[in-house]
Image (cartoon, rainbow, N blue to C red; front, side):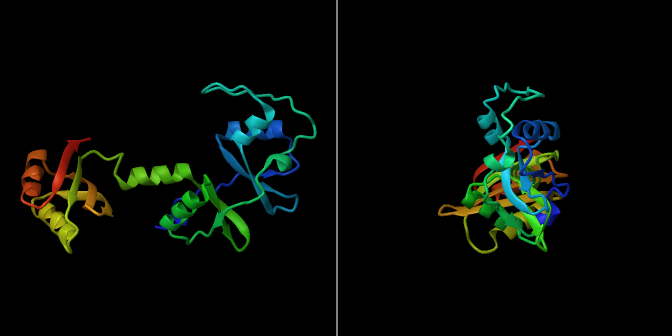
Length: 212
């Protein structure tokens, strides 16, 4: 999976000369937490966040509310408040590489660049949505969590035995640590009792099966 498969292509930018008040209003109207800042020529020169604008403007905000008009000194511009360092990636970057870069740099988004031009943005919210899809959060079925020993072929054995019993895996996520392999997957076309019977014949621990 690549960044280009999940990025937001309709990127909203703002010029550095824009006043802070209208910038905050634009972000609230668009439902954005951050925006790339561009120069008059369209070159990306920074990143601005709603949190930075709120801090600078000292705007009292309650959950679910925002002020539609903000009085601000005329000299307070986006360019004066933005972070000048912009973290970027390419559309062909692997999704896990982009996630690792965001985590390592402690940033909430990456601007996607192609031929020196911004073509999209991928954010931490996008990553959460991808994680939800990988775990089949929106699909009905039997959600299984278990720990298996980390020997060769164990995952294939689990998947094969479930398939032979008539079950169908619609997603699979694994994490390996010193205690073995932690597996999480969702199964459809199978009852909980039948699935338990299959897994009880395999060398797995900490088994949890629930219908969601």
